[in-house]
Length: 306
Image 1 (cartoon, rainbow, N blue to C red):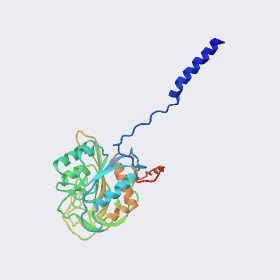
Image 2: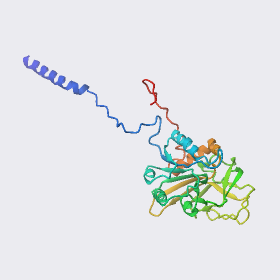
Image 3: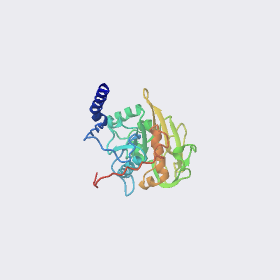
């Protein structure tokens, strides 16, 4: 009996000794006070998009690059992307954390040697590019066309405004779904320099009467002739794929309109751009357009500005 009692007392002592360790909660991780707080509801694992913006030019409602940076940083975040952007060309360090650069800045073809080298290295590793409106204008259209498939030279008269209508040339492409016979008031570009290959035209416009010009080079070997540009059919939306020697395959999506900012408020244009950005980033085409942002969890406690 005494032996049994001794065993029971010893077991009880062991349990009393172990109880604090059994009931003690694991220590809460210490939050780094310098860590960036999460954006409520943000998809932190989304594709990384950098918006290259610039100062506004032209009149009221036109070439509003700052407004695009402001509005589309929100649009892209709401559609599952992680967004950065600025009024300067992205640095090599910024490009290292980027899947797609969206250019909406007048004459973005003007770059310093360092900026050009950083962009070349980014494309060589397979980084994506999206350009809107006159972003592909600059001093060397042959070079910029090698990045995005087509470009135009600064100082040349190569735009014409008016009532325009898209003709979709690839009805099976989800990027331009719903844009066939889509009419709008904006600018179309012509007098382009095209890359020799890799261009897939998605939509064209027939230039309205109004401004004659010299002949323009055709795309992918096509020729437009030597007549006046009025009435010519010119690509305005396209995809471009290329591989820099020694590098990875890279993609570019080009949208030539956007002279007037209200153009971007059209849901069809918004979804087309979201699909083009996703495609350029080698993601499923609908990844951004179909994304639904999660609601941020309710925050308890007393009110405050945090």
